Image 1 (cartoon, rainbow, N blue to C red):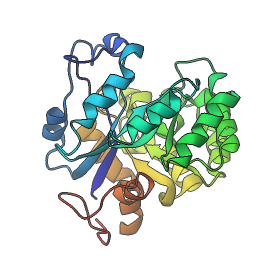
Image 2: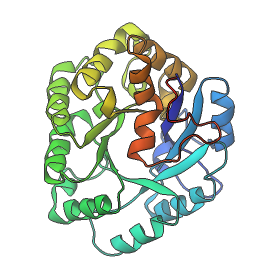
Image 3: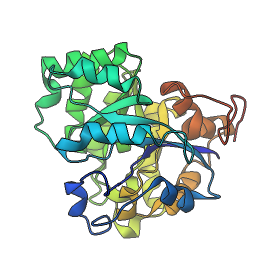
Image 4: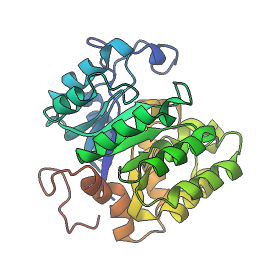
Length: 292
């Protein structure tokens, strides 16, 4: 099963600041580079990757995208999902114009660290539609309790491709299945919403880092969205607060073992090629007819 990692963070402390990571022992004071990721995933079937904006300090979010643009093409990096600020009109179109030259294939605003009302404003939604008009998906990063906000945003922006990160951040550790499952079912009824199979072990207890514990959650996502609207992400290095990336790759294969070759390929890399409009059949990337 080949994989395109659609959720690769980098922590580049020589250039950028990460206050949030300084509070996490597994990440504090450390850098995590593209070369580190390549070494960690060698031989594990990760054919290519997309950089995912890393929640840098507010003063650095544009600088991050400019820096990462220079890394695209190295180590299997195909492009980036950059940060943006849809809550304000000032400079928004200018940023979209600049992103066109920065190998940007998607945009994100982390929404669980801001006021719940931000994504519900007219300005925010109008600017999301501007993203869609550029042919770019928008990544929704909400906590499980905020999934009704995600649904409201998706219903208001029904012409904008959307990706729900981390399976909606379920509280696996606490076993909070039913409210999350119901909210995911409602989101999946909207055909322009996709979901990213990523992050799950960070929301589980260490004794739940195995297939049996995670299977009901993944099975529900598969039931709701189907393989045709699922993408895979490693969420490195945040995954180091959970099972770690090699183990997450192994768990992914175990959790999806019951699917057909075509279904595994859809989740592993084909949907990423389509949604992010990535090049195919070059270098380590699978070709269009590959089923692995």
